[in-house]
Structure formats: C-alpha cells, structure tokens
Length: 285
Image (spheres, rainbow, N blue to C red):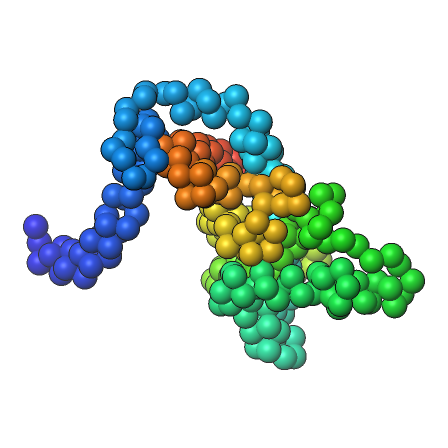
C-alpha cells in the first residue's frame, strides 16, 4: 500500500468504524432477526420465512405499502421539479437571491419533529392560519389532518416544503458548473431561453438529477418523524407507511422479528427503485 493510500485510509477510518457500528452491523442484524420470532425479552427463535408469509397476508401491510408508494408519488416529482425551478431562478442573478436561498433552505435544518408541531398548528381545524385564510376568501375549511381524504396529501406538502431546499442547493452547484460559453454559443445560433433550458441545461444536469432522485427516493420512503408527530399513521390508516408500520410492530407490539421483516422489505424496495432510476437515467444519457 502506497503512502498516499495509507493517509487516505487513516482519515477514512473513523467514518468506516462509525458506518460499520451504526449502519452496516445493525442492517445485517436486522436481516437475520427477520427470520426469527422474537419478543425482545426472550431469546429469538428461528422460524425461516414465516414472517414474510404472514406479511403478505397482512391487510395493514398492504395498506402501508400502498400509502408508501402514494406518498412517494406525491413528494418525489415536486421535490425534483420545484428544486430545479428555484435553482434556475436563483442562478439568474435576481435581487435578494441570498435571502431567498436562505428562506428556501432553512426548513431543511429544522428538526422534523419541530416541523411536525409547527404544521399541526397551521393545519388546525379551529385556529390554524391556513383554514383562516380559506374562510377569509369564502371557501370551506379543510380537515387537513383529521380527514382520511386529505391527511396524506397534507403530510406530503410538509415533506416537500422541508426537503426542497436541500435539492435546490445541489442543483445550484450543478448549474454553476456549466460553462457559460455553451449558452453564448447557443444564443449566437438563435436559441431562446426555453430551448437552452431543455436542450442544454437539463442534459448537463443529468448526473445531478440522478443523484437528487436517488437521495429523494431514499429520504421520502424512510421519513418517520414528521408523520409520527403529525398523524401517528392516522386517521385510521390514512398515513400509515411502511416505516410507521415497522416501528409499530417492532417497538409497540414487541414483535421484533416481524418488524424486521418489514424493514427487509423496505430495503428491497429502495434497492429496486434506485437500480430502476439509475438505468432510466443512464439510458436517457
């Protein structure tokens, strides 16, 4: 091993230790536990694939799976499109762009639980400011978090609001890496702003888009804190996602083996989604 490689390994070692202790190790342990019957207190009992057999006959698991994909559809496309829109606008040299950038990014640094509490007040049926303005313009107030028809949509709005700033910063970095000479050449050839955006900006941002889509899929499928604080999976099962259901089974019903099998399914779904989007982006490139 060369000296430079030894130095690199030295600086990477603390991260590798933390990664193995708190990421890789628990993940492998979770997969092993998913093949057992374990109520946490006693010893785990190996039962093979029985947890997965019960899982696919479980109606609540089907509901959680459907809600997870619906939540993904409601959040992932807006998170990509709005972050690109904000980044393009801020990259135009508009006045006050630093202030706008701070405002858009600031929700990302707020604790998810705090975000949930704040939006619970905003959505409140009686004194929430959103329903106040709906009444003010003559519309009927909406039961945002207590209606099964609106709850998942309401939580999706909060998720987009809280994560769009992070994606925007990544897109801004990508935009600032594009050579301005390309735009000058396109203008000389007679291209307008929309044509330059579609045929130059979007293709040049393909690697950044690929990374953002990957991170967005992983982040949205794993979101727990906000939904737990805002609705706890309710009303009924309207906002019950796979992560919510996994937590309930593992740490409220104390069926750790069954909960781990849900976690294993989440891992398979995320892996499948990331591989699928990577192939799509690669084919388009």
